[in-house]
Length: 201
Length: 201
DNA sequence: GTAGAATACGGACCGCTGGTCCGCTTTACT
DNA sequence: AGTAAAGCGGACCAGCGGTCCGTATTCTAC
Image: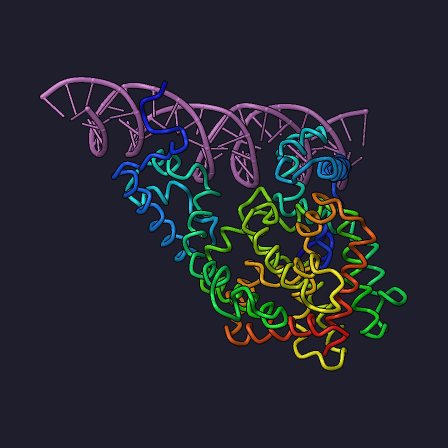
């Protein structure tokens, strides 16, 4: 028989230094990605060195590169995620689809504009396609279910994919970063595009 | 003064062995990419070995990985490129925009379905985004000019980007490859989407 | 406070990649 | 045939993500 904590709660509190180093690593990675030209320029050694810890610590804390970027993304996403999951209209649930779909895509575009480099790193994580990451699945399911409430729309699943493709990180970077398109202009272009898709024939 | 060939024609015919090796390398690369699960699995050494030449020969012939894939793409694209540049309607020039735009996107989708692995390699070439490659610029300009002839369409440039994003290689692979969506079903989904975008409010 | 076990640290190390280099072979021209 | 240019190929290189394990730190029990 066990005398320690019940099996249901095997999660131990991390050690103080571990928590501190984890936070330092997240901050360092965030900073490096924000300043770099291309996410590929940032190596794992760079992140570790910038945080003042060894590479082993970095990999122990996060597992691999993808997980580090995912943790960074999760932290930044929190406000938007909350607004979408249980916030007021037009983002939250209970909003009419015709209003919610444009709002979701606008919010997503703004988020990607605000975190361009991070999103570039997240979606361009080399080997695996972005479509196998679970965060894509969540956005797709959210948008698909909203689109399902739009009358006359034949295929919400594909439409969701196509609309999400219009705000992919590298396209946003190409338009806003390389070509210098104005933020509000880009937003209104996207809104006009979404409007057409929702309007139907 | 020069006694050799005039400066205007510095292009020399390649040596016979060089031409043969180049062809063998293209064939080997094509074959390997077609059979692999992910383009990342194929290394440059694999290609050279499969073609029966040394790595040095491979890099001498093509320069780098991107150029090899680009050459492969150019070869496969030739028929479609001809049909679009100076073929009959609905692909060729002189087709009314409302008819040509869906035809172009359908042709592009079919091309990506037929050459999934190659296109995956072409667009997912690691470091640089697909939007900086010249082949993207050509498709975008073609589609943009066609869309410019559609009445009531506010921004042909952005619309072209958004429509092209709907047929990106990794999305096509996700739908047709991973999820096993039927080819004709995917084509009709795309057509319906394009129809909505063109129809307007 | 102290002893001891558990946990975390860190940088040398590994396998592998795209890409380079240069002595040697093959081709092409006269 | 002779010669110079072009091409060949695989040993080699730098840098990457990721691993390993001897050592240092923190937590727990007394």
